[in-house]
Length: 233
Image (cartoon, rainbow, N blue to C red; front, side, top):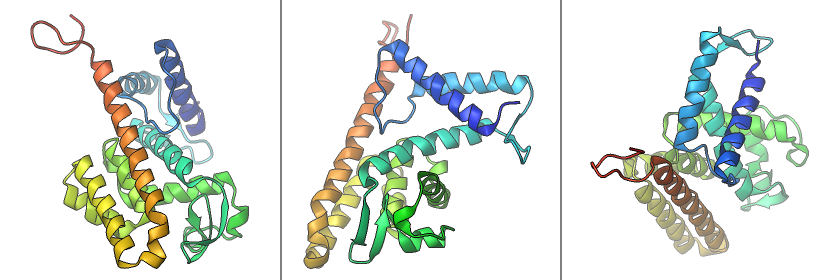
């Protein structure tokens, strides 16, 4: 029987093949597009008719929802790591050491027992998965899931407030996040002004990802038909 890892790898390979056939290169920070979601769902449904899929040693069956969550998490994590990098920072934000954007205290609180400078990519993924689960991004549609997860990593309390305030509006969420950064830099310029440009650059990167996602979604919908409906005639 296929393991959890096997199914994830197969799904990612399936996505790559689909994009290659379309002649589209997958951006590092872009999640699966709407068409791939549909194809993956059909693939999983076909697999389910042949029997349950198990996770290996635990022998626990996994659901299509779990596969979708893992895929969405991995794509969002790509964006986060592309922004954070892997550099060891001895004094991150005047607080403590960090690497891959993870503070030593955060890593310890989430089960990592070593020195943050020696953290492995596997441990990095485990820690971010725990943050993903805590953030509630799993329940959000993409690309709101990406925006909220990325915000939660910076400030869990602020992320919760911004999500509620935005009422699901991506533009409101990101504008509010940028306004928060501007206020922090104004109130405590000595502490935060040096980070403002980078913070705004990260928001700009998120907006670019959202724009690309929307562009691909519209392209996948196909040209409008003369009868007013979408898709091929």
